[in-house]
Length: 296
Image 1 (cartoon, rainbow, N blue to C red):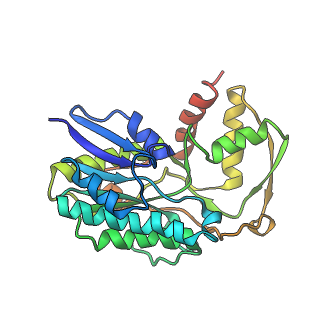
Image 2: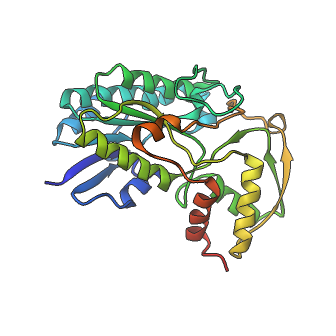
């Protein structure tokens, strides 16, 4: 019998990678887009989870327009908090595990060093607050769950920093990039592989670890440093390059405040699931191989 896993966010970076990833034999990801499942409708969520004997649910969908969320709080909370609440209740009723994606934005970003899973949360804006609401809803739902926080997700798909930099470099020779925000870029493909391992354990082992975990690729870098490495590796492939002018957050005002430190500690996910993320430049190389081609 094939174990079918319900995945939301089919057209997003992570949903795309979860669909095209190599799931083990006997497993299938069934990814639903917004058109197929209205995440603003709790009744529709309940009906979908009850519609067949799913092995698990991975809620990879989110309202991710960080700046727009500041003026669109109701929509952000509906998707980022109420939808996870509905999934949690439905998964508890069906007695199946739920994997909920969350974000570094639940933290204030004012810590020295990487954020541990138990560190105090203090979101700076609507997006982070709504994602934290989703975490709380899942934790109190009664469903067996893993909440996986991630940060700086990039891939060959959709809209993300890597694709934005390559597009901008094709148009301009110099780019002004923030240098006082640090984090670890996360390849959506690496995150997908980690989630597949977690889903398998949760489904097959009733004693599998539950709770909150962090996953990002390893290594710290600023946005400006990330951009510089993108252009270095792009140049090796014959792709677009640009000079990076480092600026401060204050020089690039946005409606929503960003965490100054988005580094995530991986101790919990390594201890619980044996997952040790690789370095982010290696993950970036795979993305650029797909977008541009291999090193010449």
